[in-house]
Image 1: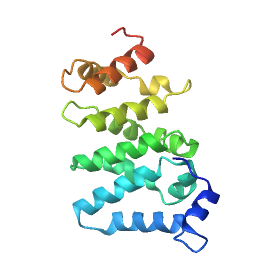
Image 2: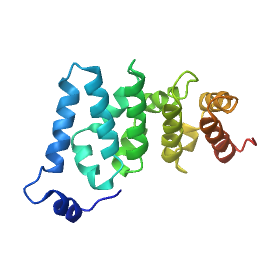
Image 3: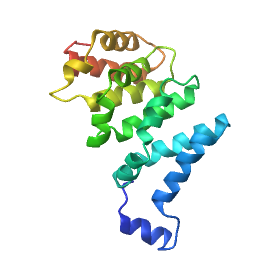
Image 4: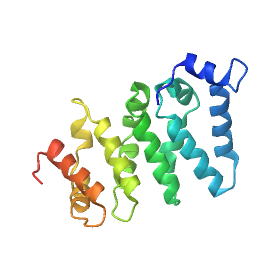
Length: 179
């Protein structure tokens, strides 16, 4: 649910925990903890906060997009899943969009989240992120043969129907390839 500052203040009171302070605490915990489970939980929380535009400025100031992007190459499948989920939630905000598009390796790592062995949520969030990143100015940069190949493999997957259907729509809408 999108929240206004007034709603947050009514819910938590004027003396309640400041949202920016709380997000900063989460980022610090993520960076300093040695616990895999704590990292997973914190990144999942940050990804959820990335859903609400009221948090965009704070998340930008805390460089949370970097945490999401770094998680894409982590060995932990849940960190990958939460990282790409956070990107899907935040990538339409112009500064975050521009940052994600600024380095080819970022786009490459998102595409790599479409590998067949990855979880359904990871693949669906990667496709969602890529779809939301596409603009008239950058579609040639995103719509690569490598991406098409990953989407075609997902489209053939009989196990993950949601990912298969989304890949089929992606191919139809952006590559004009019929199902």
